[in-house]
Image (cartoon, rainbow, N blue to C red; front, side, top):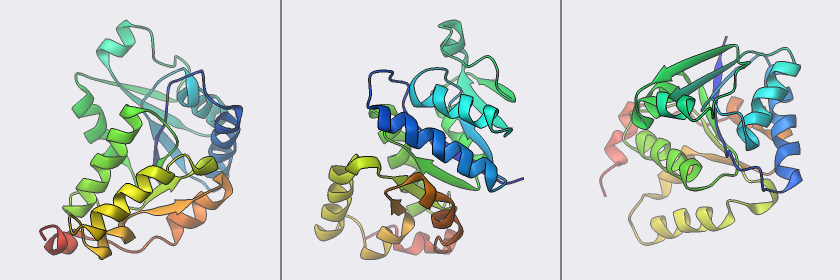
Length: 192
């Protein structure tokens, strides 16, 4: 079974539409035969993702640092919960498990995860699809910053094909399926 890694927020104080889109995304991925891997949290979009996946009969794997379990931030009803020592291990394990990555709206942790996986793809370390779910334009400014990085020659125009941007949850499976192939040979474009 193929695995989609989801980056998302733990905040409870966000728009209802973000929760609704997360619910729809989980149902669509389960319906398409994917299992889901994520950060293992129980709150915010993380909690919504877990609950919606489980209610849809899907499998969801959480990867979470031990200190977060000590704070009781983990979801207790997952298909599988993997404990790691550090945030770095968490991100590396999620990337290793993933056949694709989807970024939902989130704060600095979600942004950091997304930028790191884009960097890994640029370096040929991660070669799978990356989909940015730009709900209600949440990522517009980040996408403008990435375009500016290309315009200012910090990145190549080809790098913009490393990720796909969609506006709705029902577009994610198609974006994963139709993502351009990328491999470690693309590393040649890493240095400007």
